Length: 247
Figure 1: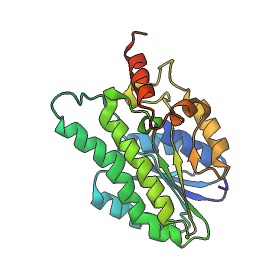
Figure 2: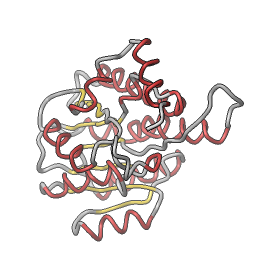
Figure 3: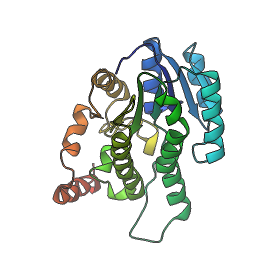
Figure 4: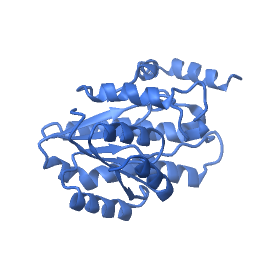
């Protein structure tokens, strides 16, 4: 993927990985438009990066997605990159009663949101000579964390969806890529100070280097171990046992 001269839309771009990617791509001279529910975070990010633009979006609301997609197509006809990054992560207990609010929020945000957003913009992206869709999944889609089972399940689904989308767009001008982060120091699960998590700046730097290649799956070095364990149920048990041990 060329790293300059793009018009890029990033969902969940006001904080964490989304903001990190937005700022790195903005610094390279791309026109970056970020979105999110929290107007304050969007304003703070755009104020810190003159020229970056934002639009408020409720990724759980189909009407909001449709309206924002139309606004983007009208105001930014050069839009050629979509990064589906918005997501939520909560601890859960799937061995107990179902938390309806948790499963609805997580599945609607993490899975239905990106699918709807892609569907709203894909015909526009096809009209460009080159375009890219990047879906942000997680290594927990390959080796689930049992205490965030619903989140892990949505990321596994995103991996599957991305593969299907890539196949269906194989003869078009749209390239489909997947970014599967490891544990990164962000606000998810209050991990901004977590020593076991990868520093955000380090993650963004390594991701940008991979982004400039043709790799369909973008897996930073710290994520390679879990990526390699797809389908290894014994490793999944070991991984979760490790997480439950006192630190």
